[in-house]
Length: 372
Image (cartoon, rainbow, N blue to C red; front, side, top):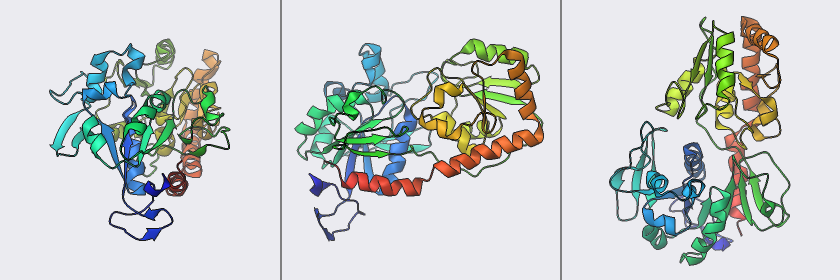
């Protein structure tokens, strides 16, 4: 199989130890997290891969299981896969707006990330030369085994793990997963497993210090978990402006990643109060890159990838287990100019220390060269 997996540029026909190099097509399934889908496209651009996603309801019969968590509700599947008419789900952006159609693929608008993606029906997928299939969730690693066996190219299968399930599945330790792409904190895997640990890529913008006198606390978590904590803090800190963005949140959804970045930059603190945290943690990554300190339950993240950015009273304020009066006093203390400036710069520096996409791209190249 290695003959199909060469890291090279389009049109490069130089000989290598794996026959003739060629541009590599990768099929990566869509998941509930649009940020993950976007990051895989950014990885493709870095490594000169062509990324294709699924579209068309027939995928529900060929291993696509995002709707599994919703009792296989076909309305959920339509949000991701229905081609025409475009499926609208207020107030969220539609996920399948077609901006161009060819005989080989559909070009889909990613409204939130101001980008487009290429998507294929099952029949188009089966007629393409595909080198790799990336299963973005462990469920798809299981269901796509048949998919790669059925495809004429016999592509390699990669299991991706990110926010959920990565610390509970024995298949990462017993060698069942042959190729593991993991955007989580490093953990032991079988010596038989070809594995790489990395950060999902986000667009990087320069750090800018917070300016202005407005005291602000902003949450970007869908459904606003631990809502009572949010309401209590808002009551006890009346001089602060509290905002909560996301599905089911009082201030609505963010229209774009660009707007989210701007809103984060206009916030003094990011409230990330999510039970159990995330294996990866997009909000924490964005806040760290922008240098906006977090109000966070440290226990939720200390043993996860986002924990590398979090040092209580240095880059974040640990709100877990704190009695309310000392916590409120601490938030007010760190809002003061010099203390806040130091915390903000510390967090930005930790992002720079731990995240280097160019360096990680080298490890990703080695990973894809050694698929089996």
